[in-house]
Image 1 (cartoon, rainbow, N blue to C red):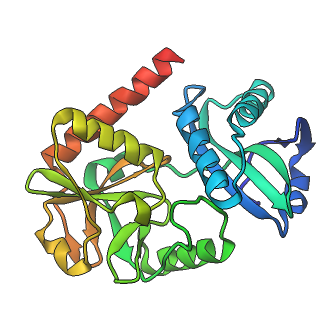
Image 2: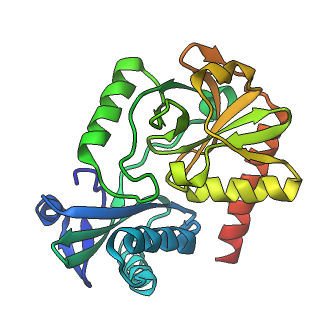
Length: 270
């Protein structure tokens, strides 16, 4: 875990120097969550921890760790306050035994120009082994990084067995069609927290959501596209491979605004 930027990490109730993290994680089976901190507030913390619980229950039949993880996050932030950045929570298994680790991870947020002009993506044949479980896959991460660097794109889109576009490697994707939204059904994707908030925003707006994973050949019919995720939040897309999309799309702009408002409410209520 070379992504640590905090001076120490919190493991099973104690702080340890950052230099020991790689050894503590090496060769283990790891489930994880990344939580964005804004103005000192871990955004949608309970939602993230419930998703972590769901991954552990689905894969390991484990009881809830929500209270224990929430306490660990609070203890880490008390000693290592984060104003703006990301936290990573790891549940690391060696056999049936596990450790709980929390630390600050390096982050890369889109800049203002990306929100105004959109980002470029590329499709791939890559798939998650179990989309609904957030589990560390080093080989997958390295292949995604290689493709992103080689193609000079912001994100790589994944697919299913039939070649339908499902999600991004670190994000979910929505399309606009006929003034409504299209996104892959939940069983084909990692159900992102930002994705769920956007779904709630769309439902409140009376926007219809069609849960479909489109083929690449269908993209030219779309009126717009955007990513959702912990770091990118709601981010317009201007191109997927050779297919271009309008960025100044009114529905996308309204969803971006309402999501920003939701974050402001989360901060104010903390």
